[in-house]
Length: 121
Image (cartoon, rainbow, N blue to C red; front, side, top):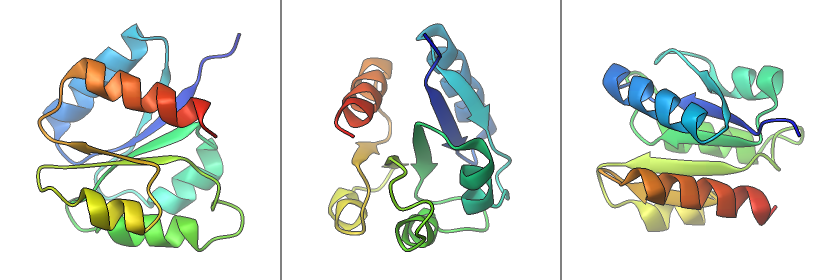
């Protein structure tokens, strides 16, 4: 069985390290992007099973990235779970996110939402 691939777009280096370790321990293949990476280009290249996308990246808006993904014919079906320290769940879901995590969240919350989102596709 091939490992499910998570593309991680998060600007907090500590969070990237923790999430990468946790997700690998749970059996996922993880590709972590640099904070200023071109996320839509990475989605095209990596073709992840799911994108874990921070709402507030250093120089980018996760919501703008989500819009670009949803409005692109070749990426529109990409599963996206958004995360933020602000409760912007409704806006994320209205703009096409498949799930939302309010930071700080527990590891089991993350794993549960990733598995549910992938399964529901």
